[in-house]
Image (tube, rainbow, N blue to C red):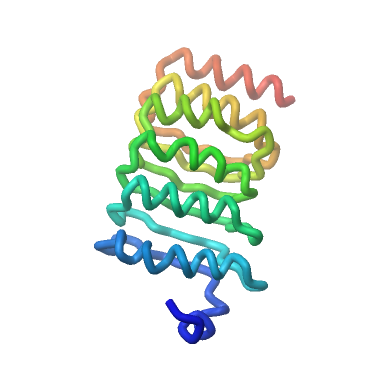
Amino acid sequence: MDMAQQHHITKLFIIDLLKHSPVSLKLQIVIPFISWSIQKENPLLRLTVENCELSSIGVIILLECLTNAKQLLDVLSIADNHLGSSVAAALARFLGSHVQALNATYIGLGTVGFQILEETLPTEVALSHINISKNRGGIRAAYFVSKLICQAPNLVSINATGNLLPPESLEVICNSLKQGT
């Protein structure tokens, strides 16, 4: 994207690439724009790349770009892309970037991904809404939620359905809620 093209979209606040294919090519075009946009006075506020057959490498690059931005993204949705646990460390770093809402439904984190998220979660997280449903995280999802509750004081909603939480998950999460009161 050249400067003339960028000039025409300086007021763009939202990018939504739902169900578009092939997004790998589009991300090669969109990432430089995002890098440029987040340095401007009118930053990108919301990015939705759901069900786009994204690669884990592309998402890691995107998350690093967003994490290192001067202007902060408010909402990110990477839902319904099978990314696997390899994106977990970059996702944890991104959670420290003051993002307010994250939708990471059905991205294939699994127990390993949730363990990485828990272990690498920044000490301060500005998140207020998170959807991590359908990631089959088991007890590791509960430990991540527990740690997130303690480190995200503005958190008002968590959707962790479909993570195959065992009964002992309730105790893990309740203990973190008790610590916060």
